Structures are given as structure tokens and as C-alpha cells.
Image (cartoon, rainbow over all chains, first blue to last red; front, side, top):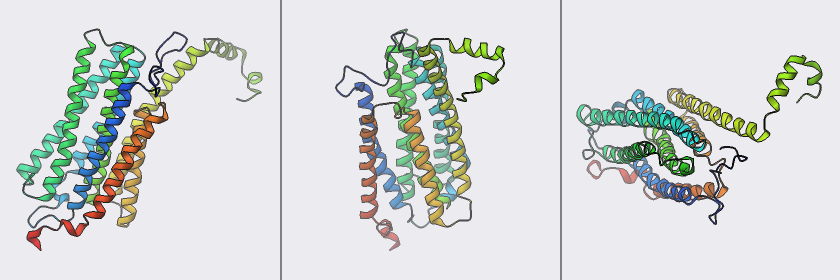
Length: 205
Length: 130
């Protein structure tokens, strides 16, 4: 946050709203809370069905690649760091630094998506696990695919914000827009933290 | 601060310290905050990467199933909380944001618990294998 003495903006509070929280931020938190329930249901469904794959379905440990997933997880964590730095930069009015951080976040997001496309391709064509040939495939592809779509939407949002920043209309006053986008991106990261443990790591125990 | 520190430090260092401390208190405070926030973010990212590494190693350790599941869940929860409180700024935001998000979390938790109770493992046995 910039100096109070220089009349800069308090990015965490908004005295004009009844809650003292900027409306955009409140909306995003409400959306994320509802998205928690959505992913909660998908994760539960996967947990219920994972223990009884039909005969002939390969075991999850034979299908999953822990190395690739760990790499994806690391990339997504680093993208969260870049996003946090981007929000910090725009709150200080440092547009150049924000752009650099946004570009790195987009690159990390694209690498993650690339890994997921590679993984899905490998599962379907090499390990013969499809969304329709087993219950494991159905729950796995639905859950990770939904997460992947969230990441894709995040990348599109990030790219739009990056392009918008070059129009000269994005200033420190609009930091809340970048912060709301950041909240969404971090949420995608925390969902993956849970998926990584519950869907992937638990299979190896 | 050590009360006797000023008496022990050389005059030159004392002067540098005085010069440094004579800047505007607000500016110093803000600069310190920004710097520390940057450091916090970087350190947290490193910590999250280390925890992820520990999680991966944990699954290969020769402990009981319950112990390993508990350790993994705790580590996952720690990562989750670090991200929402530091990266998502909940630590610096109004408590209402935390309450709002945790309402969703609690509802999600109860929904998951209910689903796992209603549809027990035996319900997932495919009809063809019965």
C-alpha cells in the first residue's frame, strides 16, 4: 500500500460501502465460497467411486504420473507468487512491474494447461482411460477437467487484463480489478492443492 | 532494542543510523511494509514448494495408512490456509471476507461429509461385478 501521507488509496477497505469492503472484492469472495461447494461435490464423488473400478480398468497408480503432476503443482504455486506480486505492484502504481508479473503468471498458467493436455492425451491414448470407459475416468476427467477450465478462464482473464493495461486506462485506482482477478487465480491454486493430495497422492498410499 | 546499544556502537555507524532514521516515519513505515510483503510472498512460495516436496516424499514412507493420510491432510490444510491468508490478503482484509469464505468452506465440508456418509464405499461397487 502506498503512503497514506501522499493521499494514496487504501486497497483493503472502502468507506463508501456499508461493509467497508469494496463491492467487487465482496462479490468475488461470495463467488469463491459458492465455488468451494461445487468443487467439494466433485471431489466427494471422486472419493466415493475411486475404490471400486470395474474389472479391466488400470489401477490409478499405473495411470498417474507423479512426476508430471508434481511439476504442474510447482508451476501453479509459482504462478500464485507471480499473481501476488502483480497485485502488490498495481497497488503501488507500478504498471511495468505488474505487466511483467502478469506475463509470468500467464506463462505458468499455460505450462500448467500444457501439462494437463499432455496428461489427458497420455491417459486416453496410451493408458486407455477415457471419460466413458470407467467410473474412475468419469470422476477424474470431470474433476480435473473442470479445474482445467477454471485455469483456462483465468488465463483468458489475465491476458485481457494485460492487454487492457496497455490502453493506459488501468491505474492504481483500478487495483481492485487486478486484486479480484488475483483472488480467482489463487482460488484455482488452492483447489489444485486439495486435488493434488486427495486425487493423486492418496492413490500412492 | 538494547538500551545500551547507542553507547557501544562507533560514532560513524551512529551517524549512518541517525541519517537513515531521519526520513519521514510514514514513508519508512510504508516502504518497510512493501518490502516485507514482497519478502513474505517469496518466502511463502518457497515454503509451499518445500511442503509439496515433503508431501511427495511422505507417500513413500513406511508408516500406517492412517498416519500418512493424516499427515497429508494436515500439510494440505497448512498450504491452503497459507495461500488464503497471505496470497489472498485475508490477513490484511476485513474479517467479514474471512467469514464469508469460511461459510462456503463449512457448507462444502458438510456437503462432502454428507455425501460420503450417504453414498458409502459399498454403494460404488459396479452392478456388473455383483
